[in-house]
Length: 91
Length: 416
Ligand SMILES: Cc1cc2nc3c(=O)[nH]c(=O)nc-3n(C[C@H](O)[C@H](O)[C@H](O)COP(=O)(O)OP(=O)(O)OC[C@H]3O[C@@H](n4cnc5c(N)ncnc54)[C@H](O)[C@@H]3O)c2cc1C
Ligand SMILES: [Zn+2]
Image (cartoon, rainbow over the protein chains, first blue to last red):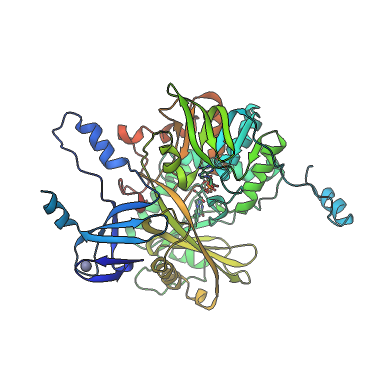
């Protein structure tokens, strides 16, 4: 499995460590159903068989967090982008 | 037919031509009282105990592949009851008791071998933690012995005691733990369930649920609709996918765990040794192969295979612990898909859908649990009440904050 790091190029997955699902969003702690939303955020996962967006840390490279799109059935990596950049784009 | 020494002699004399198939191939009936999804160890054990303990035999086990094609036939066969938490270990202690009488009970040779499980420790803190865990086990009537460095040297002289990164300081020895022939567990439970009237439906995949007014009424399968009053899910690594068909999202992620076996060697490793600090454990099969494994590959996966970095990591750890394995050739490696729960402990419970029951979250330790899991899941299916040994294993514990987190690592499933 190789991950195309936007800064370092295509690198062996061994250089990275994974955190997990990148689609979960930290809820608003002051929201009306904060307890329920936090339960959801902390514990529940879609755990899809197929395309999965996940956070990987390029530990032995640029030390940036990446959002990697990968297929959990085939381990095929479709792409990777900087996590920080993604957030900025959305704002 | 009951197996016995006499039946072996009789069949040998007639050239072994008259053995009967171990179970029957059935056509699915239109309806059952109970359908169990998943013909792995847990599904088959559940069917067996439904028939044996509750006399419920209008039951089908629906398996998408062949019986035992999942993790029950892919694990490294270790059984033990050396958990710390009192919400967990009484369940595993019960499982160990069932293992001890299993072969007589289901009249099948599962080669249950209580050859001991040793967990190594490498620091004062780990030594203290092992003492605590041992005490907790002994309070529940499970055996545990704390060994110092000399004790480990005597028990497992083939380990490397000179390594400096993880010097062996001692270990926690659990003599009643050991190994069991995994395939035979699936076959023994299957045969026992079949003999009591359960239908075992192989190559039958569940593709959906029939749910009406919040109650399950059957399952859609690749061989048509099968109606059922109650449906139990015991699909291990496929849990999220199957539960999603009933509209559920669960505190589970699927991850791949690899295992390895060497060529057959003369006896060298008499029991199970685990080297948690280095991510390595091994035992020796009765055929002589060294059977070993390590940690998860860490990324989410539904592929029953892993990648090379983990292979390298496991072998490196093995060479650190026991350099002599470097002389053995590796025969095979393989992977299985684990249902990793958010606190590392299993879930056996009712679900929000009436008549639908969940057995999942076994992580990489569900083989040892097979008898107790079947025992308690059968109890739940038959009575609608969780068995008292699984009271702490409810699905709502995450929301309530009553986690069963043996290692205290939090909601990070690949770390459990
Ligand atoms: C490499 C490895 C090493 C391990 N080592 C140990 C160990 O030493 N000790 C230990 O205690 N545990 C160990 N485990 C864990 C243990 O094997 C599992 O926790 C346990 O086997 C899971 O329960 P099961 O046997 O019912 O699962 P499985 O055998 O996986 O059964 C689930 C079944 O459900 C079926 N299924 C899935 N979806 C559907 C569907 N839609 N319709 C119909 N059927 C479906 C699957 O085909 C499968 O046969 C290990 C696992 C692995 C992979
Ligand atoms: Zn990089």
